[in-house]
Image (cartoon, rainbow, N blue to C red):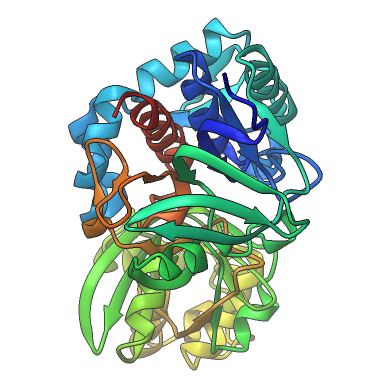
Length: 418
């Protein structure tokens, strides 16, 4: 008969989405489970997701279409998705009282638009599956004997022992929620390689001062070409927002991880097309048309039908034309410069904002050292990983929470069945 109340079948470190689902799954399979959370409450970061609405997942139901969304590391996720993919995630929450809705962009939200409802359900399931939750449980040390974890020592001196352990401590983004990268140091001390950590899904600072004058302006369907060392590497389309420091918005945030990597290797340039639905020739004809019907108006007043008001003086200045020049006085050369500036507005990114502004962390525990079929460590026999702590992240839109649900569920199940 077990006499040590701190002895468990599975011990999970980290009470975020991945950790909670891992603990719930292990509990559902009838095992004695403990969930260790260093904060006073569970799911602090979960409450912020989707603008506090909780973007649970993305309605990409084909795993082979979903996996590439995570970049070159996406293949690693295929096994976890086959066990607990998008459809099962939605079913799981619906079955447990969280109704969902799919919006036009494929994002799946909690129907009540309250992330707190998702958290309440997870906490209920932890309780219902008899998971022991210990808050304010800061891990001081993880003891290892012969490639097996023997126990966890907490800062208050308490010791937790288990047959299997799961690290699901999240990344370094939003550190005020408790995501301070603890899992990386734990894993590194256990012999795991940590791929370089960078803030991802984060706004970008730029060099140009004129951007500040446009702060608050949002372009709903902008097109941006990305150049690195004078070679085009990719293009993006979507919403872009000008801020006092640079650029933000879904389109920018989704490529920020890539931009961070490129900036480490050399110069990066953005070329923003402010009229992507028109060719340069078509745009020139439209400008000529407005000039012809407004011959007595100044240049700045002729561009109101083509450009957002905030950008008009900027485009005029950058194209080296005169704002107060009459439309019928604008030369062909000046008009060509206007078209070129509108179609290829140069912006120079300099750096990403920090982890305190990042939605997710790029980098993490090397996937080469984790068994994709089980989430088990290839170095420590009784250790599993789940969630943002591993080297895997996707764009905005529910993809990162799905990775947490999938890897968390698989890790919890594997920690019981292996």
